Picture 1 (cartoon, rainbow, N blue to C red):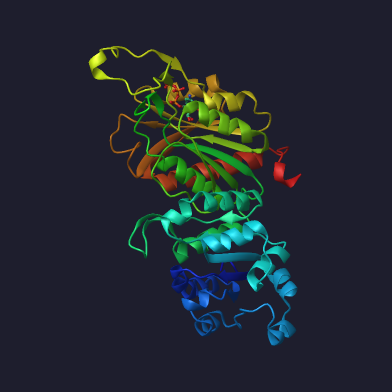
Picture 2: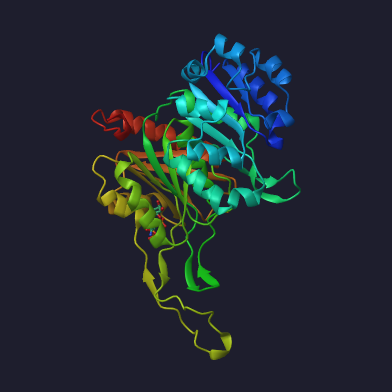
Length: 408
Ligand code: CTP
């Protein structure tokens, strides 16, 4: 019962995904949580208070000025009662109102009055999610400390396909578990790089590699599940970000370096999983290069910055972890990289084995530190990420004098 004794205030706003909230309440309660539901006026178009009252076994609140309900538990008391305010689904309108600090109905007032964490599971049409106004509101909410769970990509109720689907109830419950149950990395801020980088040759062409980003995204998910507050700096991939992880999207190695360095000071842990392109074209042509001009015979390349080495060079007490893909002398090359880049741990895989690595779902790695090697046999990228997270947690625990920035 991971949520035993935890009190969750579930705000439901008016989107079609609201029909999934009775299932969400049941799953939260099955894990031991006490759930109080607040329904917005438009949510009542999609799911009834009667249903939610039956599954939560508590009266459902809808109105700020409900005298009887206020007499039983006033709204400020309700805001204090919650260990977590979870809004699922959170509509575009709800996100806008939260970002503005509105307080003209029960749910918005509770969000202003609570000192507990607030998590939102957005659900809306993909164009609404990608609209600059929503992007602005979500950035504002993240900056205010609101945890954004999802959304997922896929087929939508309107028939379109894209980002904006609410996470499934079981995914939301897993994220809530991570938020409310302290893990070995609770209080730790961690940054992960993932995916490939793209180095432009001209406006339509680039140099890149086969990285899918799956191992980096699995790493970010595993660290978040262990309680870390994770920032994922991601190259271009087509993956849904793990719940509760802040994503910074970049394209080139230089952009990735800038995004990492702008945020590195507060991180206790850095894990470089990105397959950063080692070189970039010395000059990107401003216009599309034409075949007929015969100008493109050779491309001059310059070396990209080494991001994990740059982080390690300024690391202080930060733990710095790298990945390496090798085709020969796997362990010897990994040891060399560990020392050359100033890392604490490197996870190396042998990419000459076509059954693992790059685009697949599986991987096999050897964890190399200055003290020795530990092999993790072929398994899912998620299992690999969990094993590395366990190793990181024990390395951090072994450093008695370790500073946890957010605990200061
Ligand atoms: N890395 C990085 N920045 C780069 C290149 C690599 O941060 N410009 C990081 C990767 O994220 C990974 C580690 O360094 O954690 C090792 O990557 P790899 O490509 O194996 O190392 P290289 O330095 O490119 O070494 P080589 O090409 O000699 O194998």
